[in-house]
Amino acid sequence: MNFTIALIHSPLVGPFTWQLVRDELAKRHFDVIVPALFDQPDAAAQGTAAPYWRQHARSVAEGLAQVPKNRRVVLVAHSGAGPLLPAIRQMLPHSIRAYVFVDAGLPRDGLSRLDLMKLQDQAWAAEFQQSLSQGAQFPDWTADDLRNIVPNAEVRQQLVAEIQPRSLAFFIEPLPVFGSWPDAACAYIRFSGSYTWDAEQARQSGWPVREINAGHFHMLVDPAAVADWIVDAV
Image 1: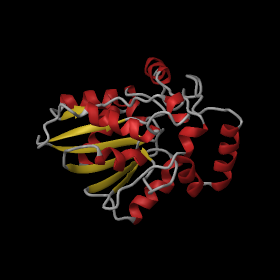
Image 2 (image 1 turned 180 degrees about the vertical axis):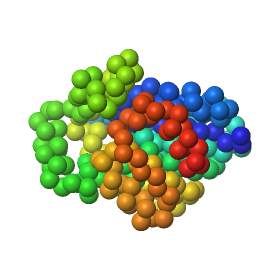
Image 3 (image 1 turned 90 degrees about the vertical axis):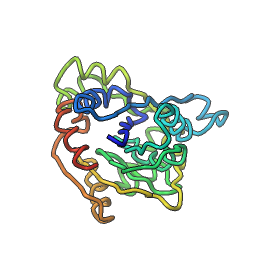
Image 4 (image 1 turned 60 degrees about the vertical axis):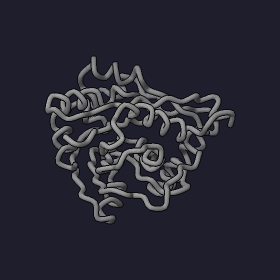
């Protein structure tokens, strides 16, 4: 293969999200990597460190540092990693073969994650913002909360162990999109009803869209099928 697939997890969870799909793709002899997103949440919230989005984009760039610069990269984003793809792309020296959004939000220049939520459901986003303003953090899922979405208890525990609850500062920082984005083909794979709006936006943009009625973490339920769909999209 003349390209590397980078599976990028949401900043709300951890790299285990993609581990089973990574293993599937590796068995099929694809060059695949799951870079871990790192940040200093307290410093970012206080303005004493780079914004979250810059720290996360830098994490991906560092994770791909060993990939030869003449090799093309496919960026595959799940959930909250979707809006980060333009920022990630700008930090990479590689050419991009494709972008694949998997039950993920779509980038819009200068909008925060909360702004993107408001485009989909103004009333829900207002309640969510009020909760965060009062000191709540999200996500606060427990293993029991995710029982129906990820039935395997061991897999579910590993997912929950990596959850990264975020405060208001994370959700209100603006996310940049460079002017010529997208600079490569894009595709969308929808699992859950929460991302129906994003899938429709992708369809209106002329991207190929595949819709499967499943849970948000379906890659941990049927990794072989999700690997198939990613390969098809690429």
